[in-house]
Image (cartoon, rainbow over all chains, first blue to last red):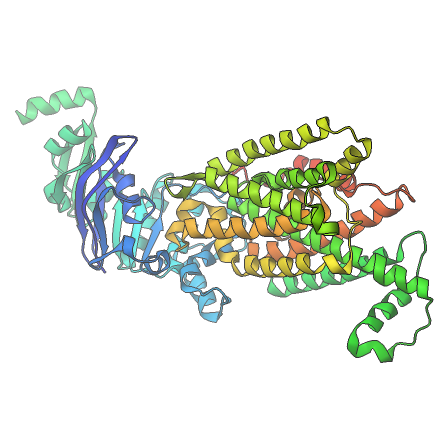
Amino acid sequence: MTLEAKEVSFSIHDQCILEKVSIQIKAKQFVGLIGPNGSGKSTLLKNMYRLLKPESGTVLLNEQDIFKQSSKVIAKKLAVVSQETPVLFDFLVKDLVSMGRTPHKKLFELDNKEDFNIVKEALSQTGIAHLETRSFSSLSGGEKKRVMVARALAQQAQILILDEPTNHLDIQHQLQLMDLIQTLHLTVVAALHDLNMAAMYCDYIYVLQQGRIVQYGTPEEVLTPKLLRDVFGVCADIQTHPLTGKPYLTYLSASHSNNFRTIST
Amino acid sequence: MNKKFMLFSLTLFLALIASMTVAIMIGSVSVTPLHVWKVILSKIPFFTSSVEADWSRSQEIIIWQIRAPRVILAAVVGAGLAVAGAAVQALVRNSIADPYILGISSGATVGATAVIILGAFSFLGIYALSVSAFLGSFMAIVLVFLLSRVGGRISIFRLLLAGMAVSFILSATSNFMLMMSKEEGGMKAVMYWMLGSLAGAKWSNLFIPVIVFFIVFGLLWLYYRNLNLLLLGEEAAVTLGVNLQQFRIQLIVLVSLLTGVLVAVSGSIGFVGLIIPHIVRLLVGSNYKHVIPISALLGGIFLVWADALARVLIAPEEMPIGIITAFCGGPFFIWLLRRNNYSFGEGD
């Protein structure tokens, strides 16, 4: 399964949010989308999961335009864990996860043994089997996030879109969640705020700034002091971490960055 | 859980049958439950011969011609309004919504007022009121629907605001007709109609509400997955494969049809469509797989009792049923509001 955005443009009230953005996610790849606030990461993802329709350009799922297929067909192939999940009406955890089965069910069809097993599996994969009869509103932020991931898993889609999946999670749960997603061997595209996370988990990174792709490549190619200064406006020291072998960023405060500049010049 | 739900539904169903039996017994002439069922069975083709006719002609008329259709109508109107309320609350994703929020009742009132005060549709005879009320609600919902479309899509926010605006205009229209009318009697008749009454129930006008109720109820129940997703929000619905625009239009059509038909025969009975879904969520949670059928049962039971009270409270006069639903529903709703562990859907 591959996912591709081709020259996608989108604007809100004449304000251009995305300008001819093209990104490509190959099968089983973990692709990260980074960029400062307001750079268009979420908007790009929303265009890719059909919540918003691009003004121009196309989104292709396995080379086929997603806007020319039914929502149900797409929902079987593509699952989303979006940034916020404001559940206004209270549901049980297992009911929420079961909703992931919706695209697979016909109008007259009841949930069967297979659905039940898939939901069970999704709950245990995300480590929330013990919460299945709890009400969603009584859960902590981290638990809620895992319920949303479990729902996406129950959807059994080959492509997973994640919009800042580790937001509001403590460090242990951040790592657990990212590890889980990595072990699923799905095609993943995720908007990420934490650049060290992006460096650690992504095979490929796209950098967005003011609605355009300004850089792309492997974490090693993309994450450079120059890019961090130009795009994010921060000074950072970047080393290859001895244990992970991945780039590791240390952000420098104003006083340190002066020293840094003297050393590097 | 499923077993528990089945048991609970069955209990409520039996409670509904019991309530309907008692409601048929109550009145100026009281009858025994045995007679109620014997008369009813004698009217069902297959059983006719198996019951011995030990009741008087007047008892038969009271049970079969007067009370039975009325109690059945009460159950159907209660069930229908409750189900429509639950569906509207999912549609607009807001628990303060009721089936009348889309302007249906004010449209129906204009239609009813036109018949009562101006004598419109007099060629339709006794059906003039229902037909005109239905046309009024149909007109209102079409107007609200057209106003809520922005660039071919329905905006829920606009739907709510358009519903309010149209309601105001239509209420003003009815009030204007009332003000210009010199007839005291007409004014009282309109007021009675607005507060709702099931006194007009006959076997002949029961058919359409019953059929429409069962069709809409069945479809809404089948759509329980989509209704659940609507409650989660637009994003969840879209990413889980719901064609949002299409489904919203379907919902609006189903709810308006059901509400329009019910209001046409019973007037705009308030509060049922608002409180019953809340009570149901309190009992069985937010999952619409359970909310739809339990709302129907509980709404039916509630209105059967409300109508029984309406008949006996100030007998031989009849109390408008809307007064009773509000008097019973209001305090309960306030109690619900004060409970800490019930989520009205305001999030956390």
